[in-house]
Amino acid sequence: MKIAIAQLNYHIGNFEGNLKKMLEAVKEARSKNADIVVFGELSTCGYPPRDFLEFDDFISKSEECVARLAEASNDIAIVVGSPTKNPVIEGKDLYNSAIFLYDGKIQQMQHKALLPTYDIFDEYRYFEPANEFRVVEFKGKKIALTVCEDIWNVGNENPLYVTCPLDELQNQNPDFVINLSASPFSYHHATNRIHVLQANVDKYGLPMFYVNHSGAQTEVIFDGGSLVISPDGKIHDELPYFQECVRVYELDEVEKGGIERLQPKEKIALIHDAIVTGIKDYFGKLGFKKAILGLSGGIDSAVTAALAAEALGAENVLAVLMPSKFSSDHSVSDAEQLAKNYGMPYKIIPIKKNYDAFMDALTPHFEGRPFNVTEENLQARSRGVILMGLSNKFGHILLNTSNKSEMAVGYGTLYGDMCGGLSVIGDVYKTDVFALARYINRNGELIPENTITKPPSAELRPNQKDSDSLPDYDILDEVLYQYIEKTQGPKEIIEQGFDEKLVARVLRLVNINEFKRYQTAPVLRVSSKAFGMGRRMPIVGKYLS
Image: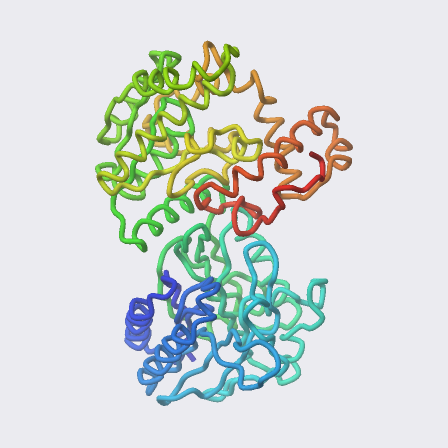
């Protein structure tokens, strides 16, 4: 038996586009004599569809996709993920289903049993969990059909769930496992995913065919990395990251085992590729072509510009240099050099006139109070007005250049440097931004060396450095990581050796600046806990404030 894995980049709600891709993959699998072709979780409608699932028309269009795929299944079995209706009045209206099509019709459905409701997932809001499990019998083989999370409770070790679907299916003596997934990227998830799948194979002794999505849906990025695992636990194949791909496997060869094929999993390279994918699909799926950003000569805007140039083409990224009286000569020349290195169009628009106009209007009302963060923010907002004006006039989407460290502690100006349509590096800590710059320069200097080596500064007052008001980034980032990703409280962080006053100050800054993050652009998610839909914190909470 030959089984084809179709790792595709779907588009939420683009039923015709998704169907066209799947039919092309069916054609390719058929040409390679595949008996079965497998698509990802909710592949008819894209993942995560969220509240679109509450529209009857959305479900009807998903059903139409399934019907048209069934028409193509006369000589090849098709396994597709789609929402299906729950005929029982009690419970949720829908199931998250894997549908087995053959001979022009639906032969069988297996609904998802384990519905994740954590981080970016909210499936119990929409779906009824399965309580029946039945293998699919096809051409003399018994197939254990599962959906994503259903294999993440191997041995009932996950305390979130009380059942293990493969335990139920194992009693029916399946020959192999197919898993339809939509498993989002984080920079360590590919390794975790392999460990989980191998744990399933070790327990049940069955080959596993695991298909994942590739591409991005707003802030959620899918890395692909679909897997075929032999009964001996060896990775028979791992499909490319961040690419669409159709590959066909001979079941007998997979069952033999002994072959190990793995993709490299270097953190910074994965983050780089994920962000490029995120930018490309955000623009492509929304129908936009051109981006704009403020290019300051600093590391954050330089890395953002470089990633955007790779994703969209440098000719489609407009850099705007907006020096103030506090900008160093190096900042302007470094920014110019980066634009020239990429062949990126750029403009130089000093903010002095804008800033002076604001000051002329406001100074009489400042009651003689001294220069402080107010004047600093007015500079940032002067730049924001310029960028948004150009964005509106020419239809360019403004890229936000704030990093995760700054967003965490509120080191940014609302309606100034925090404005934009997409936050490119908002899930990348400052220390990793430097590592990204080095990675971008791996084959030659694109980001000027001075941009990487000079002390970080917002340049909003004379001789300003980030270290004047923030701890060194190698310390700050570790405290933030423990609090945000690892959900460690102050006691646990202090016990790791961090200064008590520093921890209290940093955690307080994170919490009191929640209101800013509620108003920022979608953040491309590359970690296990990004700011956005996967991290839900109250604005007015008292904890640690």
